[in-house]
Structures are given as C-alpha cells and as structure tokens.
Image (cartoon, rainbow, N blue to C red; front, top):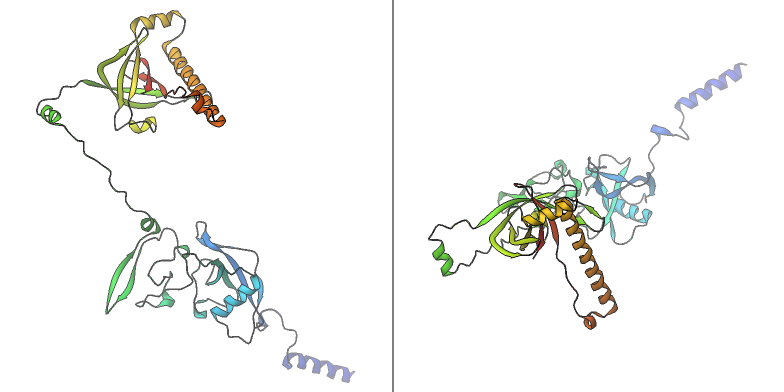
Length: 353
C-alpha cells in the first residue's frame, strides 16, 4: 500500500514539474508554419466605411525559413488564394484599413486582414509618405503625390490640407475632392443680341406694350397610356396682339413661353406656339351639343394625337420596307397641348409651330 501511495505522489510531482505535452489553448506556442488570414473586399462600403468580409478565416501556409515581412505575407496569400496576375495583395491594419507597409503598423499577428485589388486601381498600398509627419502616427494614408486614398477614409472627410517638403520650407497644398478634379465649369455660351440701327433708334423712345403675358395651365395627353396628366403645369405665355388667322370655329395668335417658365413644357420650349381660341358663336354651338368646352377641347387634342400616331406608324413602316423614296414624304404632326387661362378660365389649345 505504501508503494502505491509513493508512486501516486511521484506521478503528481512529474505532472507539476515535468515537461508539458499536448498543450492546447492560450498556453500553446503559435506555429510558424501558417498564419491566420481574413480576406476582405476591394472597396469599403456601408455607413461605417468598412471592408466587407469574404468568407471565413483561413490558415495560410507560411514557410518558417522566411522572415515575416509584408512582402512575404503578400506572396503567401497570393499563392494560397490563387488570385490572377492582375490582382495585387494589400495587407490592412483592420477592417477599416489603412494599408500597411511594415509589420510595425499591424496591431497584432493573430489575424491578418488582406484584400486583393486591381493593379490598375487608383488606390495604392503605400502608407503616408509625408516627410514632416511621423508615418506611424498618421491616421490616413497618402500617395507619393500627396493625394488621399479615398477608399480608406470616411466619405465626409474629403478635403484636407497636407504638408509637404518644398526645399527647406513647408508649404500647404489643398487636396481637392474627386468630384472637383474630374469636372470643370462649363464655358458660358451667352451671346448678346445683334441690334440693327432701326432697333437702336426705337430704344430712344418709350416702347409701348404690344403683347400680353398670360398665365396658362397646360395638360398633356399620353397616347401610350391613354390618360391625361393628373396635375397641370403652370406656364406664362407672351401672346402677340396681332391676329394670325381666323376660321369658322376659332382664331389663332402667335405665343411664346417666357424664359422663366419655358423649361416646363419640354425640349421644344424655345420654339413658337400657336394659341387657338374659340369664337363667341362657337361656344354656343358646343353648348347645344350637351358637352362642355373642356370636353370638346380634350377631344380635339386626343384626335390630333391619333392622327399623329397614324403618321408616325406609316413613316416607320415605309422606312423598314425601304419604300420611303418611292412613296415620298408623309405628313408630320406637331405637339398639341390643352390650356386653361387662369384669369378668365377659358379653354384653349397650344400647337407647336
């Protein structure tokens, strides 16, 4: 019994003081044959401006005979992930960057974050190269030309002032945003009006008001959906006082949209329109047919769009069959809108001249 007890005490002593075997967990020495790598996306995304994780962490084989540097880590990751020759491995300090050029910039070696980016990408793997600041204390990486790597910084921080060495003195250079470097202000295209001698002489007298400006509500008819627009567009037209023509049903005047409201009526806003008003006796005739002036005006616009659709279909058919030269030109219908005068409530039509 005493021998067994002495053997038990010896086993406990060897367990406490003897060499440890099969160690696991925190006390285990890290292996030099592999590194733990988390692959990230090429660009940042989301409100936090983080690189997105691609898959789970992986054990990447690493030759323990080579010294651990950023270059050897890149080579090992490129071999393991089998990327194409056009991609470059970039080692990051974390999921929010920045790019690292030495092991001192990595927080630890437990998990290494890498991304693969195109070799033609504007972003580089270089860190801050400003001579007047310590590169290890810099928050955002710089390129050699002192431009910011925008993918490694929040979107709100788009303008900074960087320091660079200009011979013996430091000078400030403002780094513009990507929007200001790619776009430029358009060249003004304003051309002053050419005035004749007669027009100059007229300016010496008080110019009498010959045209009237009228506020009009315009409705469009969409033949594709067979509906009228629900909300009209309010536009100002300057109407000539001189009568353009008069028929048995309506009279016509030349009208032009004012510059302030011309953009409301489409790409043909700068062109001339024809205002057509109903004659007094025409209003009585329309009322006798048990319909309102609004209903009759809508029918005019709808039938005009029907005829315009026929002409466009015919032109398309002749062009597709190659018979346009044989049959000659087809009729062309311009746009037409229904309008209502704000002052009098009178319904009119506007035809593009």
